[in-house]
Length: 275
Image (cartoon, rainbow, N blue to C red; front, side, top):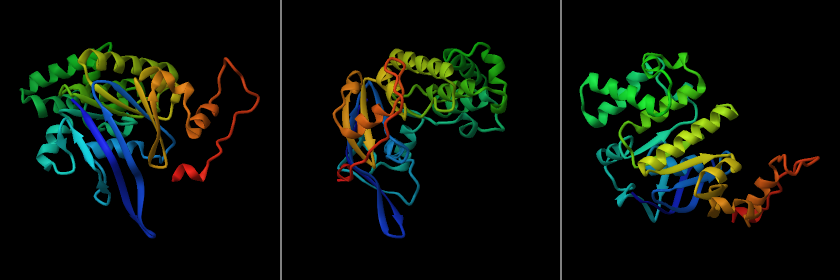
């Protein structure tokens, strides 16, 4: 599996004309963990959703190349895209409270995702759902399979979403702020789980996050986005030695116990970053 994005631009209509939300983004991904970081509105989620063609109808998308394993996303039919979405590429959304169906049990939702791709019986699908819940380290998978989303904690709901996305054995997992609604201890558990599953299954991962330290420890590479552009891309282990002023500014705004600061720095933005 290989993802190729070259000169991706995403625009939306506005009273002043077309407004570019993503501007000339280029990146590649194989069987590795790529982190995309930046402020809200920097274009992280739009870039990932463009790969699955999940943008609103008003969005105008252009690219020199936008490919998933050799398939041209811009020219693919809707039937071709359904063979990619959910089956070959899964998307984990930010908050299980809003992403899960409130009137279906957790097991039924995972079973539905499994049956859409595997075409087994209802009994086989439910057993597969229970097995998947066990894989994401749910202690009592049968009980959780019978529970509704409102009966689950945030961490359990997030595990259910991961199990649902893993049901078709995808080659790529896109995780859009998967731990932002969770407390620190549960965040660590979910990330360790995802790291184990990605490594064991040989999948590619795109992790979208605001948390630079988290991404630097968890991913192989990091792309830093600002105002719709990738301003810097580097190995995750080299993030502390980033060169771009925006990345340095993000790092300087972080509190640290090893070097306590009386006052945190405030980001100073240079208009040249928009050029």
